[in-house]
Image (cartoon, helix red, strand yellow):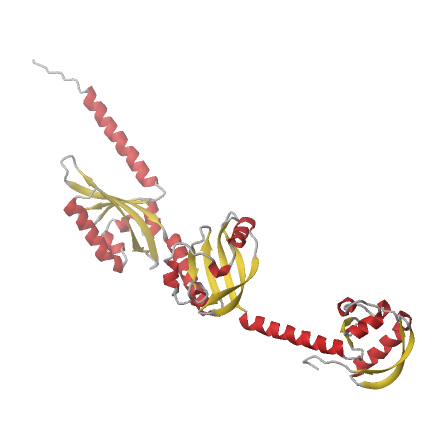
Length: 374
């Protein structure tokens, strides 16, 4: 009898290690929180884990009868096939990409896939290992954000006011057509302005005002004027801070209104009032006007002198009880109320008036004033 004995301890240990590794891989594969699959070179599913089954709505037995193209959205099949052929032709080891699967219930599942081509020790392709992450929610959020931004742009472009958005570097992030007419020479289109790195003297607003909004997170209203094509345009601009989730100001939304016509009307009105005040100050008669609470809204210089005030402005907000004739205030107030309440003019009647240098008899006319609603 002849016997041969070989030491296979190392081989036995290696086999046990292989089995242990396979067990570890199987456990990690089956219990991974992301989808995992093994696909043959022909595109058939060889193995899939629980997470992938839940992702697409099919059980393991069903998926193992499918090719990967059976799950792929029709519009993505061509790209998927080209990608797999590229793997095999060029022996690309690993690649990440996005695609769409169709769930068993017909809904679309957006996924991010990382595919690795597994080769043997001779470099011969064996199968594909894929990691699949469901990014449907993220895609829905992005789509909603894009839709929201498009709606915002449409509203901004339709607005009859200038709308701009700038960041902390004073770079223009958005400008609508209306606002572009207030910037530079007023002839540049929004897309041209967005190519400009930084804009100087934006709407002629001092840089310190932008800094204050960024620093203090406040809304600030600024009145400025600009010169465009030899024309002066007056602007009223609200600077509104845009904050992130930490309440830090990341940008400023500017809403600018052309108030040139309003300013001109206001200046014309002021001039008219000044002219009227000049006229009534030069006539010898005494003129006053008051509200329904019997508070004086104004008067001419002669009336102010009689009432004991040094200027017509001092009497504004006062009543007859604040004047020299305070002792007769109740009588005057009663008479004034009758005119205001009845709406009837009262002309050329005699009444007494206490002045600083004595008591006088005067002729008075009182006329009710009406607003646009009567």
